[in-house]
Length: 155
Image (tube, rainbow, N blue to C red; front, side, top):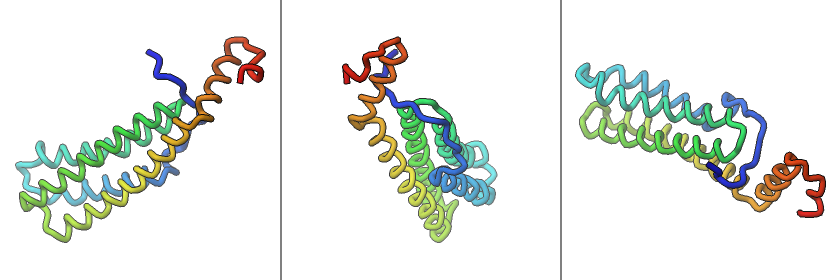
């Protein structure tokens, strides 16, 4: 299946990506703060919230290792969804009184800071993937790998 032009990039070190750093901090806080939840929620809300938080940072890391920026972008979109899921689960935890107001606010602020950073990263990668230069660059790479020595003439 052809997803259209993609720009290639070198592998990124996910540990240097600010959105991953913030998402990992959020995951640690989620794990720490949910340890006080009711034991009956161990396999329900606790598990779901922890998995959503872990999914956020895992998808940023996995996307960073992808060769094509379009693939990276798709993983960032999945991370964004997992982060939204985490925030929704925080809200239901507050409504069920598993989180007091101050703890809810603290975790929500971390979640929102992570979201702002991740959304900025997504915008930056989108601009690289969908810029006119990325299409031209992808076309020239495609033609040159097919033995086309006349790339400059075509472009």
